[in-house]
Structures are given as structure tokens and as C-alpha cells.
Length: 178
Image (tube, rainbow, N blue to C red; front, side, top):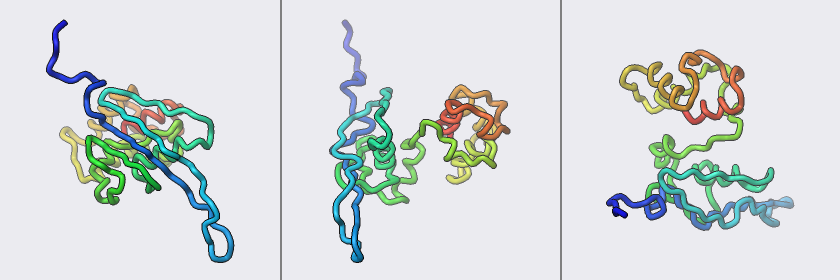
């Protein structure tokens, strides 16, 4: 057996490391809105994901899957724990500090129809991040969007179609391309 210089996936540093992640939502009661308790939505989650690995999160409705995703993507502030991405603690980054990571750290919902504007074409939706970041792709925006659609297994000719014209699985891929 020949030893390689590159570390194996199991030996490599985690791309994403979640340690002791907690989110408790306060329950306030009374005139003074005093905290009477808390809903423990996420209570001490630990996991690592290395480059090339895929993690699936399954569970019954209301068990905290989406809350966990929102904590990792910094759409919610955690009550406790840490989230590291590429070795950097992103747990308490500001909105502006998170902006460069938005391209790499995103949530893909089971059916992201609610996050896809029904009045915009798929080309406009997938092209929006380029415009928001002020980036002009080499070869033009339309060509880059069509390349991304092809990359996720969608027909690039569907550039001018609307979200309602796609199945749930295809809409997921639109979210991934975006």
C-alpha cells in the first residue's frame, strides 16, 4: 500500500464544526413580560462535516432542524455553543462579517418555493447574488447563470421560466444554483 501526502477525508480538518449548539426561545408572561420559561429548540448539537462529505438532517416536524440550519447560517443568534467554518469561529460574526461567507454557507429547504420570487424568472433569481455583490461574471451574467443551471442538472434553456413551472426537486436545485 502506498501512502499519499494528502490527508484522507476522515483525517482532514472539518469544513464545518458545530460544538454544543444551543437555542432556547424565551417564554414571557405577565404585564412586565417576565421570562417564565424557555422552549429548547436546539439543545447541545455536536457534529463535523469534512470537505467532500454530505450531512443529511432528518427528524419529525418541530424537532429543530430548520432552527439548527438558521443557527449555522447565522440567521439566528445561538444561546450557546460554537460554529466554525474553515477553521474560523463564525458564531458571533456581524451581518457584514457574514457577507463574504453567504456564498459558501446557505440553507436549502425541502421545497424552497417560498424563497423563490414567483414574479422573477429563474435567470433573474440565480443571477441576483452576482448583482448584489457587484460581480460581472466573465462571459456575461446569462452565460454564467446557464452554466450554473446545467451544473445542478437543469436545462439551461429554462433560464426564462418561472418557479411555478418546476417540480419541488427542481426548485431545490434552483436554490443550490443561486
